[in-house]
Image (cartoon, rainbow, N blue to C red; front, side):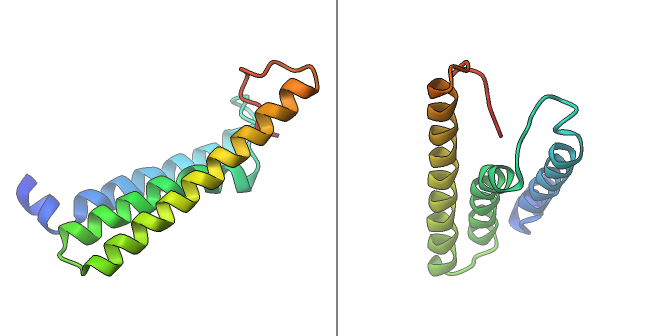
Length: 106
């Protein structure tokens, strides 16, 4: 049963589904939870994981190497964008006298 779950790529599909639920929760309830996260920050954070899961799915289902490589490059780009945004927010927080260790997502 588990072998089929992975061979078919459905394991990656399930993980992507959980990511969609996570994104919806963060988008809808993020402000209530104290996570002031704009859409661009949320997208950059989740896209890196999504592209890695798509690369996994492509590898599990026997897709050609160009698809796997494309998803991995896209994951790297999304990760770099996420890190860049976090660095800018941290510098802005420390320059403004805020707590640099606190996750300022504004």
